[in-house]
Structure formats: C-alpha cells, structure tokens
Length: 181
Image 1 (cartoon, rainbow, N blue to C red):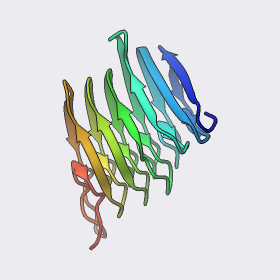
Image 2 (image 1 turned 180 degrees about the horizontal axis):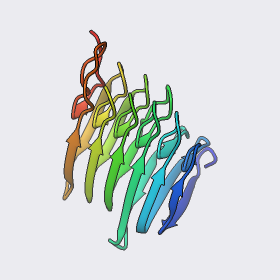
Image 3 (image 1 turned 90 degrees about the vertical axis):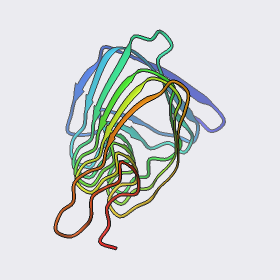
Image 4 (image 1 turned 180 degrees about the vertical axis):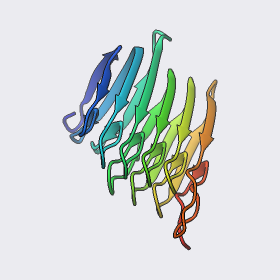
C-alpha cells in the first residue's frame, strides 16, 4: 500500500502453507483484508501467518458475515502481526471468525519474537488468540510490551498466553510477552 493510500484485498477460500510468509503486507499505507469463506494461512520460521510489515493500519473485515481466518505463525512470529523482531501494531478486526496462533516467542495477535503489540482493536466477530511459548495471546512477543488493546462492540474473545520456559515467564492473555524480569 502506497503512502496516503489504502489497498483493499479480498481473500476467498485460500489455503496457503509455505516456508515464507503466507500473506505479507508492505508499504506506508493502509491495508484492508476482506474475508470470504474459510482461509487458512500457515507460515514458516520467522514469518507471521498474516504478516504486517507496512507502516499503516491493517484492518480485517467480514462484510458478508461468511469469513473465517486461521493464521498460524512460524517459530519466532505472531499468528497475525510481526515476524521475527517485528512489531504487530495498528491492527483492527471488525468481523469474521479469527483464530491466530503464534509460533514460539510470538503473540497470537501482535508482536513476533522481541516485537511490540500496540494499538490493537477488536470491535466485532469472534477472535481466538493463542500465544506461542512466552508470547501474549494479544500483545507483545517475548520480552516486549502489549499496549492500547481495545475490545468493544459485539466482539467475542478467547485468549491464551503462551507457556513459560526455564528462562522467561508466560505471556499474558492480553498484554506483555513473558520476561525474566
């Protein structure tokens, strides 16, 4: 997406399982993704299932109320948000049935390993967010913060922070990733 522009993309019944990023956004503008049917995204090591790399806002919508997204990040990455060392900021979900699972050290929705998860808003739909080892369900990846996370409207939310290991703590359901501090 170009600066000061919005890219509108519809994904319909896709099933992508790859060693890189299943879907990645880029540029300085905003990206709107409309969900139609069941969409499964599984990325490889260091890549988020739906990887947000652009500077603008990522909005996931389901205007037809028939969309489902299952996004699984590889090790070191979020389900939806940042890849390895990538932040997962400025993400909005306005509908759909979303399941986002982070890889080790990544949030379900938010930052990858050592990535922040800020300005995340869910206003409608059903979202299930599961952090990988040390990652938050929604928020920061390993040792990073999750801030300004808002849930409102008709949203149904299920979150699970990632488990602890011998060095760092468990990730929060909503908030920060696990840290040895």
